[in-house]
Amino acid sequence: MDPKTKFSTHRERATNPLVWCAAIICTILTVAVIIAGIVTFIGYLVIHPRVPYVSVMDAHLDHIQIDYAGILEIQVTILIRAQNGNEKAHASFSDSSYSLSLNGEVVAQLVAPPFEVGKNSSVDFNYVVPSSPIPLRPDQAEDVDTGLKKDLIAFDLKGSTWVRWRIGHLASVRFLCRLECRLRFHPLNGTYIPSRCSSKAK
Image (cartoon, rainbow, N blue to C red; front, side, top):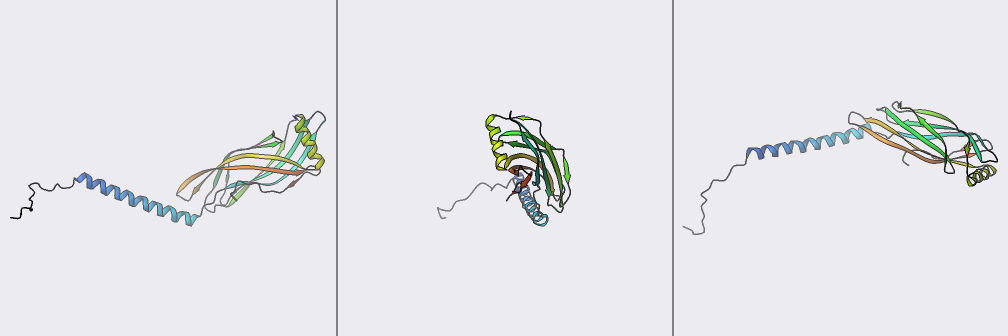
């Protein structure tokens, strides 16, 4: 007999059934995740969802006046449009709030109640913003006076709104639309100098 030959006196142990069950379950879950990913990707390509957004479409400086004591009075009209470019999904907007400031001083607050925008549609909000008399510091009053003489006044608009929409039957998405831009006017006739002011990505 070859001395290198070895005999095993123990039977090989059979794989525990629980291990087989765990392996089968893991395989099924892996396949399910892969299939779900493929379905989601195909659904995205078919639906091609677009993020709703808000934009300033037009504005007008209706009134601006500052007296010798540095008390400012203004009235501004701002047209903000909520746009939903999805052809197969409504969009819900909520918590819409924007502040309008001049030389760092908040002069008005623009708010809107929750609202819906239909498929591939838009909703316009025409904000008429009168302000209470606002006392300005001497340096702020001087800046406003200089702007009036140059026929150029700039306001800062900053705020946001929450939007929620469904991507088909796949999921519900909630997104914060931020607006932060400068609105410039010719105070002599109140005309708005058009510029890009939108939460839509460039």
